[in-house]
Length: 289
Image 1: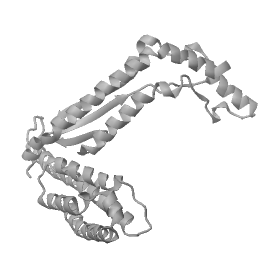
Image 2: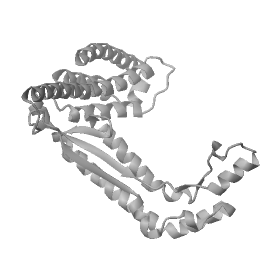
Image 3: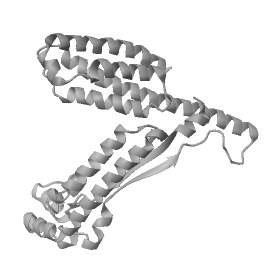
Image 4: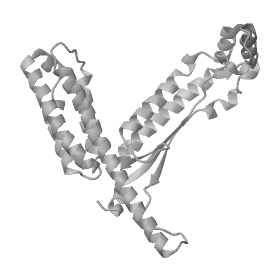
């Protein structure tokens, strides 16, 4: 795939979140603990207190965690710093799912706001003499302390450079950018092979010994991985697709209850998984080159 078609087939996405953890450093308690234990320096430790019960924040926290998991599952590595990549063909589904998380998060935050006064009272009561009204943000500012958002950006072009540098230097910069782009593309492809490999390897290990117990999620995870890899194979890599289809046909189509009840089938599925892992190792070597 050329850099231009790569540029056209994928976009960059960044998951942005922030939250209030309701934790506060208590300088008075920190100093007292240091003094009571005869510490030579009060900086040897810090006393943190939770100023409202955690259950008031749990719903919003869980939604952010779910959104992050979805983001990481449905995107590919790009550069460090939280920016990742997703195919244009998968962008609409990705954004639709993330918008649902955003709506759920806003609802959860409004619930925090509506119960904030009660949470403060309960927190003050639980802290006893540690309680301090100055520790608490105003009720009007609480909503702004939480956020969940997605930033979408175009992939950088390796051909459209509008900087004032000598021609030779510009040529070198373009060549290096093209090389870097190809490396990033290979890294993204390798990530998909890794996902398939980890899922198949786990299945093979759990099924290879009769005494090993496996959960229903073993095959559910395989189904999820082959589905996600199908969406994220933005290069249309034929070897990756062939491997994905083989895993889907021989492993992901199985159900835990049927495999548990049939020792012969369990043995065959484990054998198929081992054969796929062997074949996949050779493909991974080609991708890394």
